[in-house]
Image: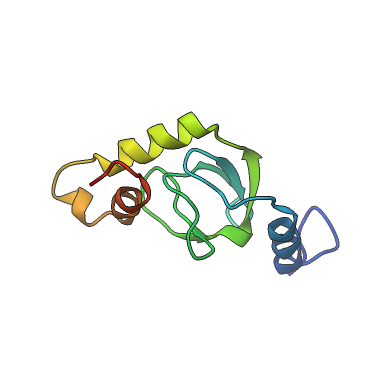
Length: 109
C-alpha cells in the first residue's frame, strides 16, 4: 500500500518515523496516527511498542504507526498519569489505560 504523502509504503513510512524518534512516546504527548489520520493525546507511556490514546473507545495501537506532533513536558506527563491512575469505578478496573497508568505513575501505590 502506498502512503498518500510519498512513494513509500505505509509500513516503510512508519518504520522511518519510529527510527527517527529520539525517545519513546509518553503520557500527554500528542501524536498523529497514520492509519486513521487521527490526532491523539496519549493516556500513558509507550510500552512494548504500543500506545493508548485518551478517549473512547479504548484502543491500543502500534507506536510505529504514530508520529510525534507535540511532546508533553514532564509536568504534563505526571498530571496525565496521575489522572488515569486515580480513576475510580467499576470500569476503571477493566480499562487498560488506568491499569497501565497505575503501574507507570510512581506515586500510585
